[in-house]
Image 1 (cartoon, rainbow, N blue to C red):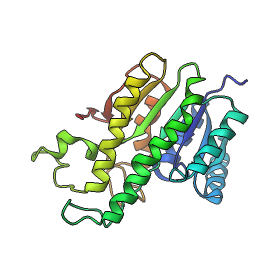
Image 2: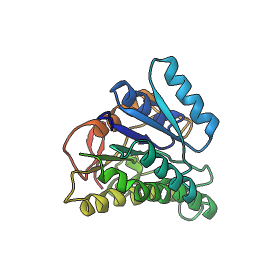
Image 3: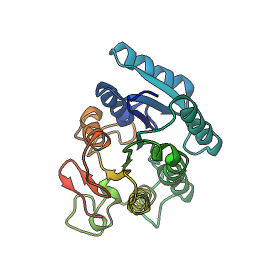
Image 4: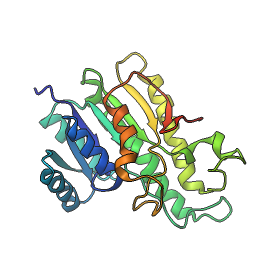
Length: 239
């Protein structure tokens, strides 16, 4: 079995996910590009190949249990373990909004991907993570998921009222907290990482490039002993 670390990045065919995959590959990690669309996954792998980086496309729809199960079986068969899991896949729905106005369908769609998808993938990959010598789980969160900042009128995030998106990231943070406790007796490290205010297809605006936003998630995927924390580029984020 190879000693090269194996990483799965969900939603890795574009945006921050692609940049996380690229930077992990640059660090010598064998990266699995999780993508629900086969063509987009292969296109991302080809893009990395043109940069001299090797990666592997893996069909993975985080909202489809059969797809998740098949991906876990493929990783088991081809690699035998998983060293790094980056739960990056996420969506934002423009019909989300304040509690009194948000589309219920939008809130359900956002939760289905941002929280239930991450939970389902994590459950499926846990046996593979347990078989790695010192696995790491990085949950791509957001400062909008901070209950403290959402309730602070002086916070720059206070006015961003998206009940579906914000609550889905708060729920993802709860996954970090509870998973860390459940795995306390193992060498597996679990953290929530907010990449910062990144301009992607998801947001349409921001002050950071995807490459800049990928740096902190990659840092926590590769090294460090902090466990069960919520961080952003400026430091620790309040839950």
